[in-house]
Length: 152
Image (tube, rainbow, N blue to C red; front, side, top):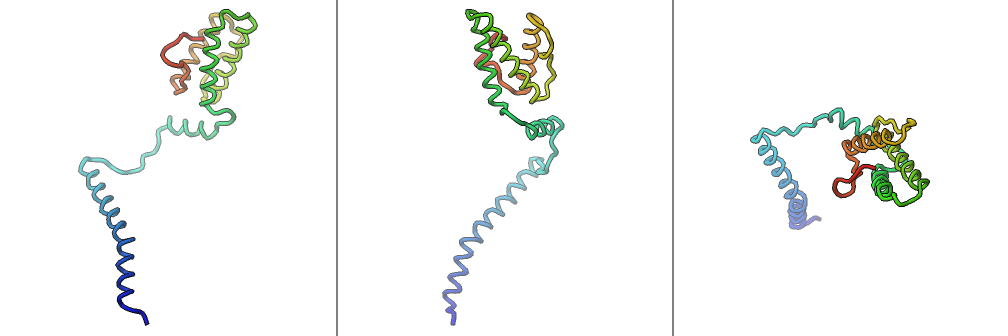
């Protein structure tokens, strides 16, 4: 035979463990909903904008090196290019070619148009590097280390 005292104690324990927390959560959500309606907020799902969807698709299609690692490599190579004036011409050309290759990889990953594959040299190539750096910075890739530094 079951003792009524134990049944009542079990019911009270269940109410304390389940009923009170559920009651507080329900009250909290109802009060929060009332506050939102008073302020004019609407808690509805809003579809993402075209730019957000395009960015999400680009992140899903991302293959190879992560963009954070590319950005770190760009910052490192940018310093190397800016400080290699005392090195040999072959070393300077190697730094610039490596920097251009990483710029191209970042542009391909973020669907940014570039003309770094062209046979441009000298000033034209420097201007294209500067333009691509600005496009990447606009896309959120931080290339310039601390403050503003000169372009590669």
